[in-house]
Length: 323
Image (cartoon, rainbow, N blue to C red; front, top):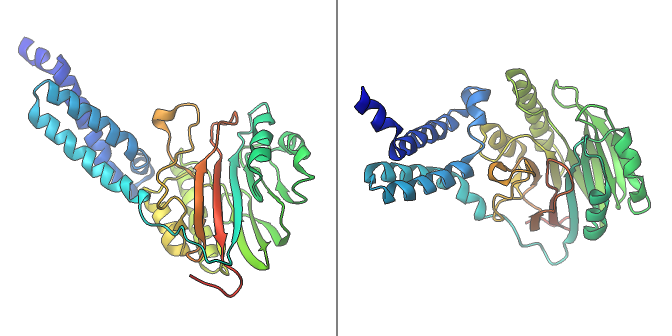
C-alpha cells in the first residue's frame, strides 16, 4: 500500500495523471456531436496543446520518456486541429473593390462605463458596429456616437441579449428577427457599400451552459445558416456566436451557409474571457461569403467587458464582380 501511494503522488505520477485527463478531454472533443458536455471540451484545443507541450518538456526532464512521448502526441493532435486557421483565406480583393471596416462589440450589460468603447470606436472609425448585450442604459451611453452613425437599428433588452447596429452607411430593408426558438433578437439588413448592396446579419445565440441552452443555440445557428444559404451575395454574418471553430455546430454553420471564416489565414485571435488570457477562446466571429476578401482582422484592446472587440477589414466586390 505504501508503494502504491508513493508511486502515484510523486511529481512524475501527478504530471502523468494530468496528461491522462488532458488526453480524455482531447478525445471527448471529437465526440462533440454526441452532447453539449462533450462539445464544451472541444473549445480548448489551444490550451490542450500548450499544456501537453509543457508536460512533455517537464516529463522529459524527469526521464519519463514514454509519458513525454504520449504528451507530444497529444500536443500534435490538438495542433493539427488549430493550425489550419493560420493558412488559406482570401486576402486579395479586386482592384475596384470597396474597403469596409466593421466591428463586433459585446459590451457586457454589467460594464459600468462606455468610455473605453467610445474611445475605441473613435480611434478605429469602423463603418459598421454591432453591439451586443445592450440595454436602455447602454443605448443612452452610446448616444454620443449618433452624429457619426446616423443609421441605427436597436433592440435593447434588460437581459444579456439586447442587440444594436450602428452604421455610417445607408441601411435598407432592416428587420429585427428571431431565428430559431430562443426568442432572442437578431438584425438583418442590406448595407449599401459604394453601389453594392451587401446583406448583413448580426446575431447572438444563447451560451451552451445547459442542455436546453445548447439546444436553443444550435437551433438558432441552424436557422441562421439557412438564412445565409439563401441570402444574396455578398453577405456577412457577425456576432458573438457562443461557439468556436472546433465545434461541429460551427462547421455546420459554415457549410450550410456557404460561408468562410474571416479568421482563416489570420489565426486564432481569441476574444473571451477578456480578463483571463490562458482560458481565452474565439467565440466572436465574422463570417463572409466567398466573394468577399478579408484584408485585415484583429482583436481590439480591452473595453471593460468580458469580451474583447473584433475588428475586421473587408474588400467588398463591386456590383457584378465576383472572385
